[in-house]
Length: 287
Image (cartoon, rainbow, N blue to C red; front, side):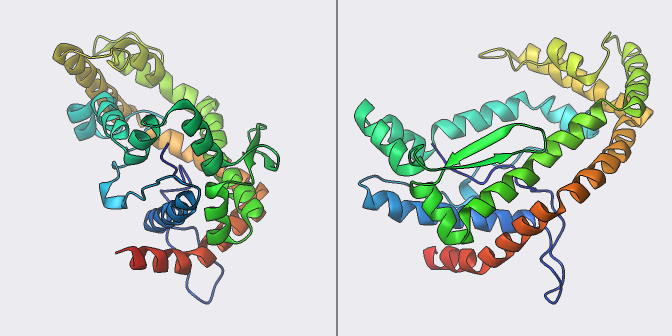
């Protein structure tokens, strides 16, 4: 039941100078905004008879690296394979999250009341059609909505802009994966993998065949096999330039999408920049 601002451009560049328009928030900015949001949720939930803990960023699990087109980090592959060990660690830590533990300790009626207190009801909803075409909705009531309203001011505008921008990555990565230039590079990668005794057409198929993630408790041999497969993937990615090709293709689609949705980007960045001073004050006061 932990609530976060997930996936909102954490690989962003820094802000523009103070006399220019707001720039894309940095990972540190999102971390501050996320923590401030949780700090606002706590008193709201307390007022409704429930407990909510704002877990400091230093105590949050680290974000895992993203390899949408294939692993190009040999050291990561050698140490973590496809990341099954890290996923299991994240799951273990999530099960110990204080808000999850508290929620699970409630009876059925209390859980229902807790959920309404946190996320509201469907009587009033905010909806947005994402660049992917999916329609997304959220409740405009409850402590989560109230926290975001206090932090960002115009919560409907924030929700629509933030979710639109968040969805852009999914769209431009999907288009890059379907691009003929990427498909040609994948064929070269597949030929390279054959030299490592893997008959696979793309990195996704390699994960199906070699990942230990499907096992409830993977053995060390299964994890070792995953690491060996991931290391072979990384070697072939680097040899064939697969990720370099994909990144170049991605940039074309990304530029097009960001131009199309520039108003949403500007709105999100403007509201985030305006919220940062409030967020920093909340975080400082909580220390």
